[in-house]
Image 1 (cartoon, rainbow, N blue to C red):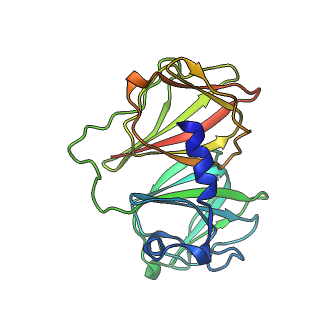
Image 2: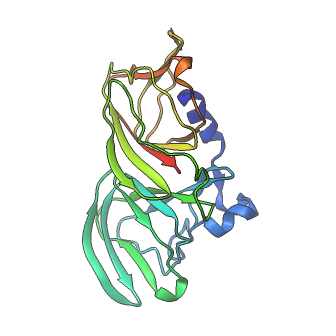
Length: 241
């Protein structure tokens, strides 16, 4: 399930000028950057994921945010911000895998952020398309794995965000998925999967920034994934409420 989702997400990568009309209201535009719109790396009826890279020393330019979104740093760095032409913050460090929630910001606010460090910042925005929870009658819980304890990064009335690290040779243990989940790799590696006790061949190496969508998986399917490579895999898992 996880491996298939990673492969399909790679096929969904789309240049900004090819995005669907219905996605455009949810996408950011950084007017000062050469690649002002980045790439859409996953989209469906519930969510759109947009990957943007801010080179060292560059400012994004004044832009708006649609709200109901988080940012996930694939590669972090040093941010500074301006609001209405005045400094808002300076030298704020975001780590690899760092996340944050964004409410709506109108263009008239004069919101602008800049990379004031010396390395490029690579981030993905996960933006919800619905104004209300998509499963209001379902009690969404944090994702659980028998062999691993995810770290809770953020929870509100729209989503749960967790960070998961899987060491070489480590398996999650048999678990279920509630569906309506997005994962984003901060550190890639080699995955294998077990379904009903039968193990798949290892995947091709998954790269940092690879993303995917997870539908529901029942515990009876005997689903488990493991790190069969030689480096730590780290990903951010978003469960949409």
